[in-house]
Image 1 (spheres, rainbow, N blue to C red):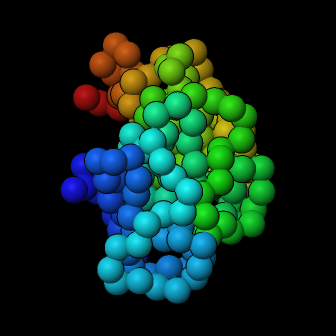
Image 2: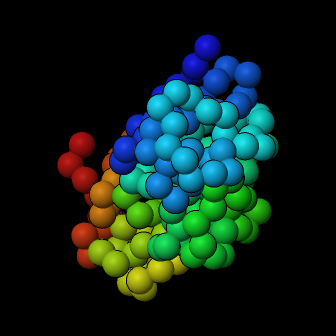
Length: 186
């Protein structure tokens, strides 16, 4: 009984109504989260996750928000997209560093982003073309970095080399491809 689905590069995941997750497909770099690197074409349970409220899949990594507001990610991590202050891949979910409490999250190509309960946007991972919106371009950010500016957001979507977020006033702000947060026509 799946409640939501997330499609990644060559894998998919489902958030199950009992608070767990299942993934299937190509298991490159442990993206299925079941402690092995063997591809599975039927759903397998993601190890050690309970209390999931949402799930998001990127190219080769996935993240889940838990009922506590914390986020755990797994899979490919060469660019720090798991947010655990490392660049080592993980075949099981690892907590995002910093103790932040999120209300929404999104996994992109090689980065991840979330909106905390206070409405601030945070991103981590590859910042080669500035999809983190952190005000400076560094190649890899392995822990959450605050998006520049004082805006407050309610939702966020991480894409290929960009990120967009919905502000509390209904405006949409986007950044990436070497630009900082700017309003989108909406």
